[in-house]
Length: 412
Image (cartoon, rainbow, N blue to C red):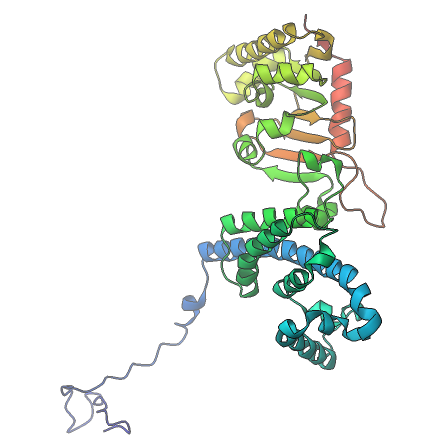
């Protein structure tokens, strides 16, 4: 009989006088695990690691946005309230601004600050203040309590509060290391971008009108030059960056490739006419459908002889019809080249600092729809280091286009 009043199981068969049968009501103890059996139980397979990385990537993106918003909100609160309270209350101006309604959470922030001091957690002297230990909800509370002070600087209080409400879900998920869905992440990024713009911290990159600057791009953009995004194929590009977003509102459009399907098949002729009539200058450079390069490309892709050349010819005819409807056909130029095609590129506003480029290289066995896509941002890089600045890919493809255009022949 065990100490808990439960009957222990009998021993093995080799013990004399002990029955091998287990009486009714007895509790059987688990046998010891064999040596080495714990290893496979703890191993993560490929699917588990994929899920962990996916969660970490989403949480990382959300954390960057939350960090930017919190820092900006902290700076705004300090800029508005410090001149009011500091002359009277000195270093305790945050405690005074919180007032009786915020007594509990501001005292908690003071206590955390003291603990951080003792344990050496304050690595930057600039963070040795109570404001640095306030959370987003507490910073929001300071703004709400003193809204008349912020009203001259912020147009809509409701916009600020709605954006902070949307971010609260993400903040709780990230702070507790829970799973963050794609929908909630997208909502947080939109809310963060809108809030930063409302608080006067919008991006100053000219191309942000067409291709919004991403928080992650701002922080690590230098590592990737002017490459904004990489898509495994054109289908995924179009999901994230539709043709209307790429070409709509352009003042200049230069394109080079075999058939330029991204433009011809995804941007209607009517839209091209309106775009050109609004002042956009267009230069389209197709591969000559009668050249030997087209035949060689057909063999590479394993398609019927003449199929690709007919497709290119149809695209050229469609663009000629668009050009014929314009009051100034000279603003819509079409030319063909006979060299081996190496890439397709769409340079939107490539002559200025707000350009965007879509680039695909030609692979031997892969159609253009299935080839990887690079999205490039023109002008200076979003992030610059103190080291020697390196030129990006955008000028390289722009120069290649100009050289090919100079060697090409016009289409009447």
